Image (cartoon, rainbow, N blue to C red; front, side):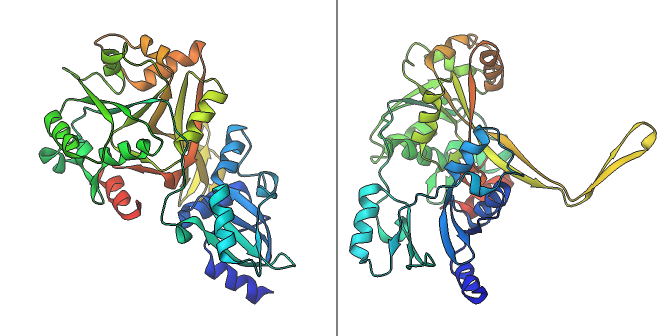
Length: 357
C-alpha cells in the first residue's frame, strides 16, 4: 500500500491527506500552484478540496491552523470508474463544467485524474457580469524605473502582452464591455496602444487627473457616469480568479465595498522572542509561521459610495473604506496567494514573469 501511495504522490502534486489542517492545504496549493486538491485516505479517494471551500472557512472566521480539512471539504463529488470511456467522461465534464474528474476502482482507490485543461482547448464558460470596470492607470510607476522612463506601467509586458490588456481581457471573458481608465503619465501612449488592439471589442472611456489624486480620488471625475456596480482594479495587478464568484459574494452579503484579499503565508526563519520591561524573556517561539489577508488592489464598489469621494482632493481607497465601514458594510473576499500577480516592484514583477501562465 505504501508503494502505491508513493506512486500516487509522485504522479500528482495536488494530493493531500484527509488528516491535514486548512493551513497545510494552503501550503500545498501554493507549492503546486493549483487551487484544487485531491483528498486521500492512504490510497483511497475521499473527496475534493477547493480554494472556494477554504475561502468559505476564512469568511466564517474558522481557525485555519486548527480546523481539519475534513470539516470543510466536499465529499459528494462526481467520479468516474475504471471502464468508463473517455468520450463519456469528457461529455460529463463539458455538460457540468467540471474542472477535474477523478477515476476510481470498485474499492475507491484512485486510478487516474482527468483535468479540464488537459482534455479541452477552450476555456470554461464564465458567467456574464453586468458591471462597469475602472482601471487606475495614472501613476508614474516610479518603483519600476528605468523601464517606466520609457513606457507607462500599464504597458509593462507580462509575457507577450502588456498588463492592462490582460486585465481588460480577463473582464471581457465575463462579457464586460464598459471600461473607464484613469490616466495621466504617458496617457497618449496608453490610448494609442489600446486603440490599435482590434481584439478588444469594448468601449473605453479615459479620464485624466490634472494632479495626483491618490488611489481613488479621481473617480469623482466620472461619478455621474457610474450607475452600475463597479469593479475597480489597480493597473499593476492580475487576479486569476472567477470574477463572478467575487461579484456573487459582494451581492449576497449586500456589501457597499468588497476588498479582494490574498491569503499570504509568512514564515520567520528565526527564533522569535517576547520580552517584558527590563528585557526579561517571557517566551520564545522557534521559526513561527503566520497567515494574513493582504490587500490586492482590486475592489467592488456600489455606485453610491462614489459620492463619498471628495472633489478634486488627494484621496486613497483606504480612506474610502474606513469611511464606509463606519456606517455601511465592507466585506473581504480572499483568493489564494498564487492567484494574485503584482508587478508594482521589480521583485514582484520578476516573480510574475516566472509564474504567470
